[in-house]
Length: 286
View 1: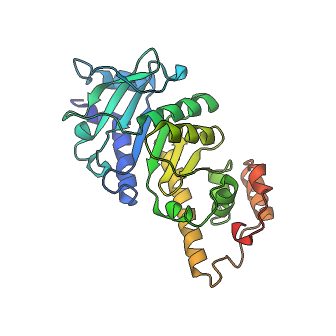
View 2: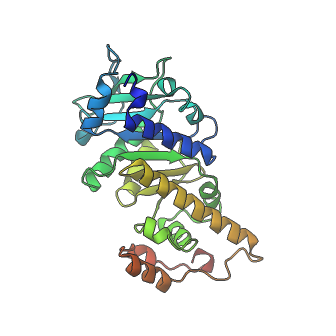
View 3: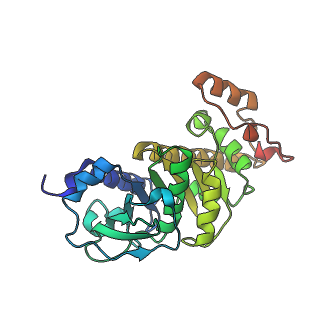
């Protein structure tokens, strides 16, 4: 192997960037992807690391459980559409210091640059997801999913409302995300406030909707995380079309709560009871 681009984890990372672009989720430099590497993946890539590491850069956040970890990250201001053409200029591998509060570039962004501007948000949420999943989750993915964004203009920003709408829009949704989805009100992206708010949601959910902005998901691997994003966005699309097609703006019929429980029993998944038991005065919100 003559290049890091032949290492499987790098190939898989590049593939996921391309998959999101094909869905239309990454206009210009929109969206970002980070992956917490396994030790054996670091070993595979280490041969290709820069001879002289970049300088340590403080993040303004800290996590003990991510000390010494390595992450693959998209670059700040970089277009995901360009990742497959020039990965060496659009993505990077960063190392976290032993204090758990700074990063340095070990490979990539050869023409200059830094990890995604939302790296501190990703970092804090990696810490949460590593803890609550006993280290299983390794992927954090953010994309500008149009139908999810559209729903944030018409639905109350409540996890129970969004989850019920999505569950009832497509039969398999409650199997794919039985815990539901969180919702974060609009905040300026890239700052500490949205990072903390997202962490609160990711304590309980695999995914969090960012109002008027997009979707933020986690998973143990690229396929699972991408599949979660894709399923939520498709359900949001169905919900949007159904509401638009109805003369009243409300669905004439929906998957019932009993139907949802039957699906859970059939597929052996435990649905979030707080979501199932949520009641609204407005039937639009299922």
